[in-house]
Length: 140
Length: 118
Image (cartoon, rainbow over the protein chains, first blue to last red):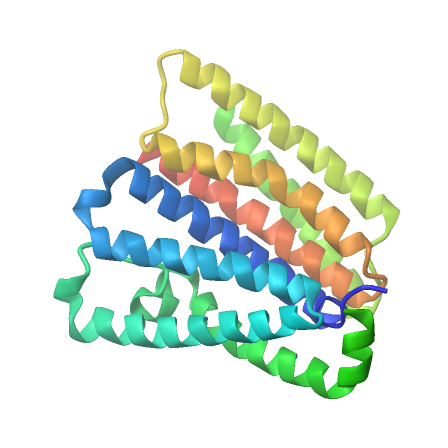
């Protein structure tokens, strides 16, 4: 049996998370490898975001036992990150020499970084209420 | 040869996406014939990548090389991974996964063109 968070609509959620994880990882790898000095804060933040997306993708794909807690942590960090960095990038734009994944609330990625953690939280809540903890423990 | 191949890839993956959208709307999962169609799109993408490598070995180079090669590798990976990921799900949501993947491939063709030029 496959994981409850990676079935049905969750299949799509994990796929979109995977795409964002690849996009953010590749972009930050290129930025850090070619010109880290140009915008150290922005590029390191992009790298942090990339790692969080990779963790969220894996955790949601597994979706059982401890992975659920990891998924909750990842989507929470994402939402905090996109709200904090999104706001900072507007009120303190001098801090960032270049755009990050989370700048302007993820505008560069079609606001997917803003919407995705909200969908992730909604989905974790929904699947959480459907499967009993005992079932989770037995399967995990 | 390069630009027509990009356009062809974009059109083919767009068509695959449209097919997936219709099946998703009808509450149907991804079927084997769609994976075969996806393999045809993948074939064109491989050809496109080969042409890009040959061109880069010659005189014309992508303007932003690291980004360009990153997009190219991503383009090649998306459909096989999406096929495996979607086919395991036997509901309409598998069609939505294929739709997202096909649209991403089509969009990446535009980005590839932009990064090669700009």
